[in-house]
Image (cartoon, rainbow, N blue to C red; front, side, top):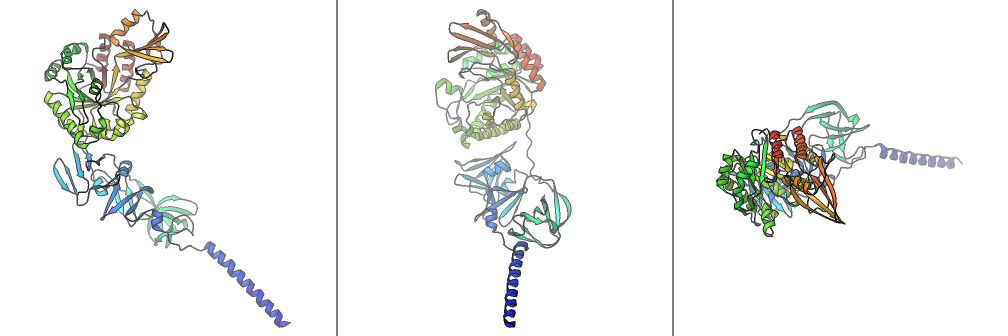
Length: 566
């Protein structure tokens, strides 16, 4: 019996021991610190030759490349995060960067770049293409951008902004882990006395960044001595200043529509009409083919005569008149997306302007598609450099800004050009199929407000329409015909049409029936012009333009002269 009892006791003891050991193991598993090391390739999401990017304090999705010891960024990444001024022409194998006074060029796959002072050796391949992507050396980007980067084993720390950061000291040796929790994989060991940047403090754990830019989590009890550090900004790159030519006072510009060389003979008549006008813009030049050639109705005698009237002459280059006149298929995209064609056009515009003695250049490129936007902006950048160095005023005509035409980039135009002219009309247009005002006050005012969000007020010029549209609606058919400001009064009188003031559009409005058609007209006249000028005065913009000479009345021009102070 005694032996049997002892056996039972031993068995029970063994069972208790097994239970204790098992329970202790469970407790150990639950409360002991995990020792699993994180798979750093998976953590950073990188493959051979790739580098994760820590931008400020966050790891972004995009990756950098490490090639022959040099760090490279995808051009799209550079545009998104660093500097949108770089322009690549993959067809010609060129990377361009245009400043206020120069265009710097690097050829794909070379370690050279050229600027106005000549050629320079970078000491590394500046840029290259791989598939559809263009990669640019991080060190080359720094030549034109204030930012910093530090290279580590699998990642890159990048800063584009600087300020105060919170710090903590590591109280005793511990680990930084992928997530908050003692079982989370370890990123690396932390030594006592290390300083880490505090990114986010939670109840038991804190998100921190180490001196080698590893971001992870550390227990709060392992941290002590909170502090702050002031980061030192990078200011190595000092961009050239964008200087501008400004008229002495407000611009008062009249567009002179010229459809042939004979149109130049009407200068005296147009100058006499434009009371207070100080700039005349003849529509002389129009792109004729996909090489960037253009036809010209220009006359140096016209320029000299205009100067005699006290007028500056800004020649207009457009991309649509020749096409409309002849039916020739002219692709602005093909011209501007080719660096050699685009730069030849820029040089020819400036050469022609100087030969004629013009005071300025006016660019009126309309109907561009969104894919042409980056090329158009580069065209304006390059043109601005040559205009600036040759003392030519550069002005650009634009639609009233909306989300669908923001690729015209008024913000960049406001930086590189002298005047941004907003065509404050075409709220409703003759082939639009809907009757309405050409330029209601709200349309004009809102367009100016959107422009002023992007362009300095002194550079903004609002173009007024010296015309309106008579609408005829019959069933579902809506047609229109243009009537000039000079003729609209007589026309309404002949139609015995009575007008009433439209408080919303701030225009006189008339409507009548004739046969089965309903006629409507939102009148542009001295009253509507006066209201628009009052709004422009309040917004303190740089001036007024008129489309077009030959359409106006003495009363309207007197209002403009009073507004412009000329």
